[in-house]
Length: 308
Image (cartoon, rainbow, N blue to C red; front, side, top):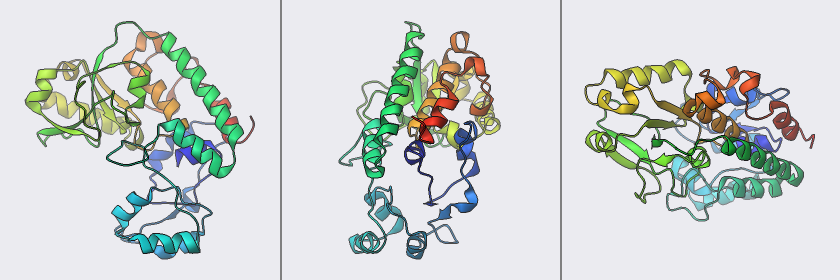
């Protein structure tokens, strides 16, 4: 969705869409998504994909990884061919992490392909210029001494006794924000590409300076994030971690990140890691004071709306 939105294409249908996920667009001038006009591809029980909805939406193109669609829908190749023949092509490759998927693209490789699909090369070029400027500015202000960050995906399961850790430096897009900010990965050297179950003992042994919750910025609000932090502080074992004692929990985007969310995520993490340099993080992307904003919201809106 975010890749298409960055090119000025609003969705006609989604697998699911929660109000919380729209916070990034609400923080931009002249950009809006009306949930009432977005169809849900799942059936009324949110359990199966309804093929009839694909016909009703009648999309020109479906930005979906066909392998993922098959996995969640239970469809076979004949079902995919039916939709492609009667409705529109299914074009996509999940880029959150490779997970044995080929081809696998970096964020902007995927954006470039989408720009070709929609014939919006000028907007793609504008995005490249903007993100290069923004990250160059952020990186020029980073300290030489970078913290060690332990990144976790899906959920930070307080009671599960194991956590899903991500190697920041691996070839994956959900940890892109932390790579761009040059942090040190707490699990460096582990070559897994999806996630690895990390037990409490392993985490205590590594004891990262910061704990990062990938995608929490998108899926949760600040109140629920604070509840997660408080639960860790009250936990018999996790409360021994340096990051928990210092309340050094960091929220980033990741799962649904395109060019728009990429910038918001970088700004949020920069402020959380380096408040003395970038300003105190207010807890929400919509509450960042103008003087601390690391990218021009109006310029982003102009690119989305084709004013490039």
